[in-house]
Length: 291
View 1 (cartoon, rainbow, N blue to C red):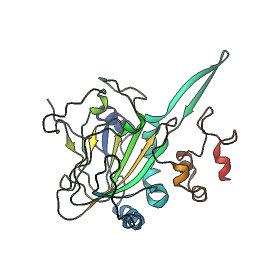
View 2: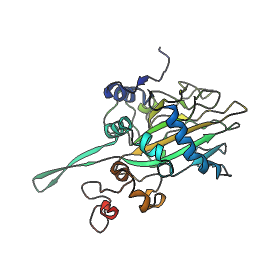
View 3: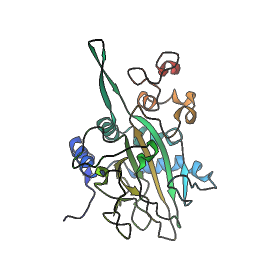
View 4: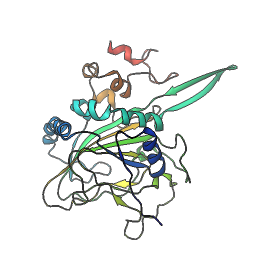
């Protein structure tokens, strides 16, 4: 029996290699995703927001050992333009999250496509003393249901995450623990073994790499064992366009700011109607309000 592993694929590889890795394992590491200079620029942009947080969050899987910067794509131009808008991430979101349906008007077919939305963007800055998260699926927030499967099928998932670490990430500083292949599991009680480590491996990353993960994959942040240092990671999740976004974008990002964003980011925040008729204002698509 082969040991579980996470495939490492160069950014320049054909898109099919990333698609196949995500279908097979539920996750993949992208080599050469960004540069050290770009990571430093992102760090400088989020650090003032992290410094303002004197009470560390205990929401959801967070357990009090982590500083956070929410509203991330609005607070960091670098994250918004270099990480979230990255063509590879956007291509994978289109591949896994687009929904296309055909409906009928009398005997006339009408095919519509709904494109992914940004569900959440957040920087997490983990420090010594942070305990390991419990293994979980991130699509729990959307009450996603899963049937066990031997092979991946289209539209099985409704979430796709991008993790961009700001430093080398190792087990010693809490690298995310994942179970490759668990995205094909059903909703029955999972067998993590007596020590809760069956099939679990650490997603150790080099600075400049990124990690893509489907929302149905069992994972959890690791314990921060070192007594010094920190682990900063920029996290974005996109969801299929018919789902409620985890972060309420219309309240998180002022319209004056949204007007300065690229058309891609505007649409991913929900400022475009999902066809045929979802998400309008006064019967028109909301991008009309950005003019």
